[in-house]
Image 1 (cartoon, each protein chain N blue to C red):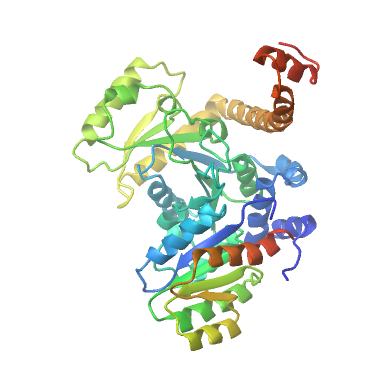
Image 2 (cartoon, rainbow over the protein chains, first blue to last red; image 1 turned 180 degrees about the vertical axis):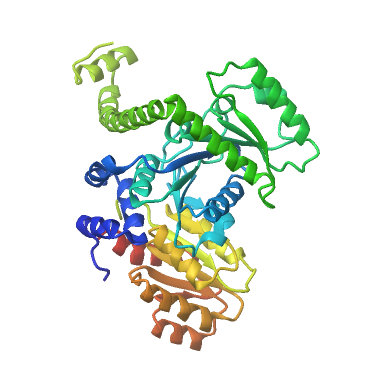
Length: 308
Length: 136
């Protein structure tokens, strides 16, 4: 039989900066049992550079992640990668395959990669992603890359969590109407045109530019960087753009604002998650044999001392 | 059952490009409610063990169809011990002769599944062995 891994052992291993300690601490967070550890490390965090990477499936997010890890490592920075893939709503299982593009970093002691299943959480991340970022930051990783599930047009939670949000697009995947749609197009601090050797890359660049002329930007105007993640073309320019955005956040005081927003976002998520469970029980109980939905809703709310 | 999904690394090691089996197993474990981390092809034992540690995996399933099983399985057992991670349930499958199966089990591989093994047997094994670990 396997030895029991208790909370104190995990915290001890985490404090000793072992990869097992960090890995198990993230699992604790995924099981909703990391609150005491988060409370203890929280005052020390905020040191890491956090970069979010989002975009449609197949655009090259994992390959871009790998290229960014390589870049950060040449600068001597340690890196954490959190890669989120969807859980099946039916079996609750998941196939987490983003590591395939990151194999060259597996045995680098200064790179820690964690695949997370969304476990029913909507918004492009997993419920415990924010905690995983906190833990990686406290562990001492310099750069934390957060790769979302392959998103559609409204999974924008990543912008709440990361300091800099990269939106990757690929040429030939839609006309200007797609580019103009709301949602992920509005959260980009940096647009990446990946697969930039594609014949339609210039057209995509023009479409992004014309969209940007229409949208209103408050202070920061998104950069547009062309990359070929498989060969590394454009990654240096992408890194420069990321550093420029972080510097802008710091000089304008937006960094503090962003941190506050991320904090509030997590508080909201935690509270909502808890309330949702309690609510579900009442909804089931009050809906059974109820005469109409409003009456049932009133009875549900009455248990929380509020009314419609 | 555990209070969380089991996490299993499905790996391919060495010069072995035949991943149909690994993908079938990965899919079967996923459909049985597990979180499956697939490493991709051509991994070294070090890469596989590092992956299992960082992913906090309950188990590692190694697929080998290259004939190098008597080298690669023991190397992973060794790596797991060296990293203090031999609590991770290590099993595998592939075209492995019966005598070698006996030898590999003696060397510390928990189970070996050969061609024709029903998927349900593999799922049951992982649930039983890794589930035992996840409950702790």
